[in-house]
Length: 374
Image (cartoon, rainbow, N blue to C red):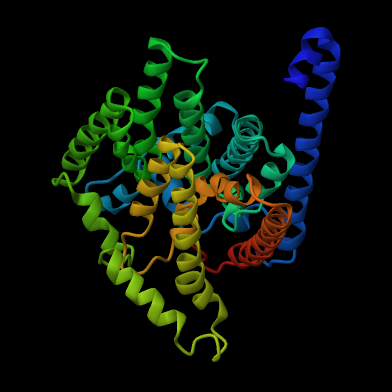
């Protein structure tokens, strides 16, 4: 309230404070970008930029260049929205596909971090700078530097949540905007179909997800002859079949195997410890949100988790859950207990953020060197 009164009484002061905040955000973001450049600059290869074109990035580029050929339609595991966006922009500016993707992803990630930090700061009364830094610390955030669709999906998801949960933005225009984003999201990443769960809270807008699904099934039938080909195509990318419980069993078995003792640290982290750890902490965050009356946020967390952990081995779960990372710090920063409890939770927040940055730099260097990560 005090800040609002100052801004009303002195608009110039309010504007200067806003500019100072955005300048601080940009400085933090630039420092993070330079840190990633520093930790990956020792990789061998054709160039620093070209080294980011790994794994799924090649498939997205192929979709833009060749589409979905009927002779080899396995790329239907990747929806066409992201490669079309990157390809069209690259064509307009006569830029490379990878370079365009990197610029778009960097802009999308920066905007997402600002949007969530400012919004959550007002909504929960916590520091926007701590939120901003925490979002940058997500272990899979280095995918911003390659042509993967996760970052653009993340931006659209948080714009959607902001529209749905901002009380000042009601009316038919807001509903239309939500419906359009829900229609588009699954064409960026299939994870968007998890938001069919919004039927529990946003019934009218959620219908757009089912329209999108009908179009997607028709698209698969047109390209590959089967509306559910995209599910079969997962097997062609060595994604093992299985449900949540098979994945849980496999990860627990690997967690207590001799991998760590035998020096297989990276597979142990990626396939066992990190998927299990984040499953637990995201579940805890979802329960906390539900108890705080943040029903739509809780529904979103649980539905995306449901899709993230649907394979026999959860090898990409940490990346699939990247859009959810802003909620992870809320139970640690929004405290109402004793001073001692607050200090413990803040210490846990600092340790978690430091650990995530360490993991991020470790895996970024690996990915840039050509290894598979998430």
